[in-house]
Length: 339
Image (cartoon, rainbow, N blue to C red; front, top):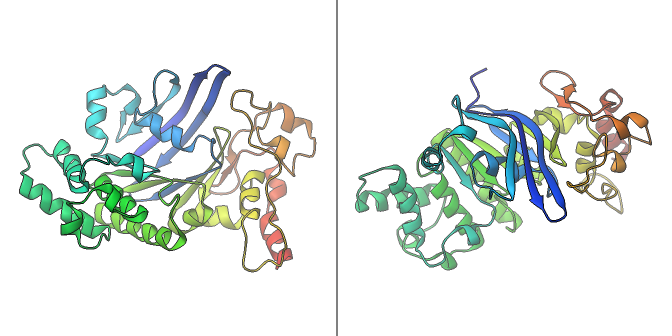
């Protein structure tokens, strides 16, 4: 295996609030390999976005605080990097497509100017004609029609899908090694979501970047990801390649996510949601944070007292469940019974 382009180790992030300390990210570790797409999936508040924003130095400090951990990018720890160097890295070797393009784009500046700004910051001395040429070419790569005309328009003249394409164009402007896509299809209709998926595939082909795909959409994970990390209450609860995770999930939370999705084959009148609510990250339940909602726990004392560690479930497949052996083939049997 090649050396990881980005390696997160024991990252712990907290936020101080009036109600107490929010344990947003609690000791997570994972690698991002060159050219792969790593999907990070979980409910809102599970720590997916905070982990990547922390790595890039984009959380407000205070109230945020990186308590522990390191983030090695090509062997250098981003956590210890001077702010000036980190700024040069952001938008260059590491780029991010943010969740809401309408608030990420400056409404009073033309789209082309903003793309050009991303090019100029990381390429000293490049002329305006070259900036325009490259900006138009980037808009063409991401599928914006009439890119010459669109280059001179304002964000409000773009549709939601077009703004997201512009954000992706800006992100790949400097051929990043790592492209972070934070909920890239949120608030877009289904047909536009499919188009954005194709744009991300094209962007990866153009730059050979590793993509970190942050989402709650398992369909998007199935379409794009090579490997998957499942997060719950600030911790990694399962990880593995995408085929293994979907065919044989070994954590009750992952199974709950899959069973809550509608299917075309199951003859059911109602969906099967995960019972209960996500826990407070200020007062997280003792033991396994998922145990109050877990069908496998059934009041077992170990689930209520001991925090489960990630351990092997076969190959590179890891699960943080005390009783993961009992889940072998569980999802497949359930799916078969529903057909």
